[in-house]
Amino acid sequence: MSDTGLERWRLILGEPAGGSLGGLSGDAGARDAALDWLYGRDGELDRRDIRRRQGGSGESQITTVDWLDDITRLFPKETVERLQRDAVERYEIDDIVTDPKVLERIEPNPSLLRAVLRTKHLMNPEVLRLARRIVEQVVRELMERLATEVRQSFSGARSRRSSRFKQARDFDPRRTIRANLGNYRPDEQRIYVETPYFASRTRRQLTQWQVILLVDQSGSMLDSVIHSAVTAACLWGLPGVRTHLIAFDTDVVDLTSDVSDPVELLMKTQLGGGTDIGRAVRFAAQLVEQPRRTIVAVISDFYEGGSEAALVRSVRELVEQGTIVLGLAALDEQADPAFDRACAQRLADVGAWVGAMTPGELAAFVAERIGR
Image (cartoon, rainbow, N blue to C red; front, side, top):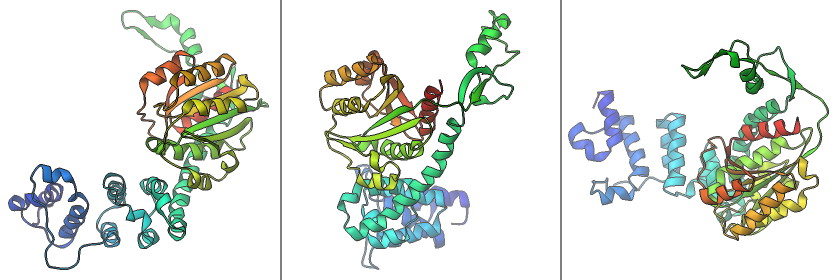
């Protein structure tokens, strides 16, 4: 097969298309074998009665180490990461992160970090030492990227004074709309802006705020656990902010002492188990020193395993004393939440801010509040 387009279709459709599109040889054949090693185990192929490649009396079957070597040689980096992610998340091939031979040669990436955190309880000390390399490298890359966003948010708090420096992040929409109301055209339902206004930023002495991050350790919140640990580390030591990090399932664990070392912090997390959000909120309430200068961020999918009425009551009490309560159904770079909307709505009804944020957006929210 020499036509590139046909070859790609043959790789996409797999062995069942061989009768129509022909066979593959050389690197194309090797790519087909590597893809079949992974996706050929999909049970859907059996249910749809699609023919699969069967083992014979030839050479021994490919190992995970061999497969990783093959895909690294045959595919671009982005494809390799996708194949690795499907291997650990879709097909649960745990030896990718529990086999020392694999760990010694694998290239760290976020999907492997998630796999390590899910399976670290299965690892012996030697394997755990090798797996830690993945955690350290991916967290370091996250820290470098997110620290820049956090520093930008805290580069100066907005003031009410106008600024001659026009930056999108300092755009003042309320003043701009008020000043340009005379340019409103009813027939078009538009305001034409002649003069935009921007707020200045100051570096005045900031009043100390507490930021308490409550992180749900359930398996569905893994991305948020990772980004919460890194975000807390980025906030740690910033002027005007005192950060606490609390992990919870049915128990509550104060991880604040490890905030400066997010790698160690993540290695201590225990994913899974039940969820008692109300208990975590009550624990946070005991840490609050000045309610009107405290932000409590509850990072959870809000599937409450304890008393939902007690959770709502605890959140209401925090709000009534002046504490800002954020209910974040996701805290990661996608901010794509899946959560119990009914429970979240009850929290919003008593005054919590409910939604999803990227770490940069959370940092900007905190910076905005402490700079007022």
